[in-house]
Image (cartoon, rainbow, N blue to C red; front, side):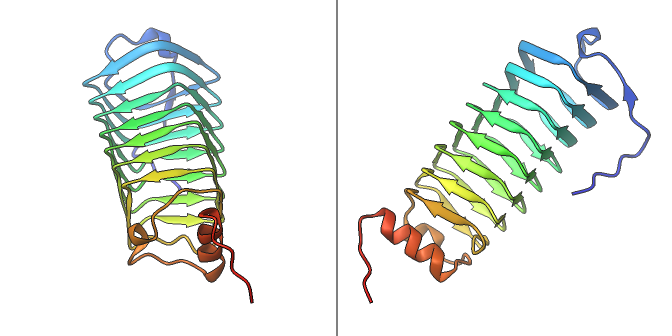
Length: 205
């Protein structure tokens, strides 16, 4: 997704902001640590080559926000709405999305590892060449979301439904998922074989 901004973004320092209702700015090569961002709005904001550690976005709105070449460690999105948000070439390690709404969110050539997505809804989103490893997905609804050439390694999907999603170009390795939760979604024969084999079923010709 190429996010077109309404105005040219201005470079700022995150430490200079007390009121975190942010618009039309970008941050570059910053370390943002141990902060809770609550009841705020980020609109048309970019983070470039930043490291976010122990940051909580709580009841916050992110619209047209881009994380480019960023590291997000122990970053939590709680009760937060993400609309037209891009994570491009990012690492999300031990991140958490809890009771979050993700609409038109793109994950591009990124790594998501040891993270949790719980009681959340994701719509019209796109995972492009993403590596997902040992994440827990619990009580979620994924709708009209495409997983393109992704690797799902030891993912654990618990009571998570996929409605009209496209996973046919992705690979499942030791992934726990309920076939019934994939009804109406697109899969390949290889997908089915990978899912079935993870359940200990041996298919012979």
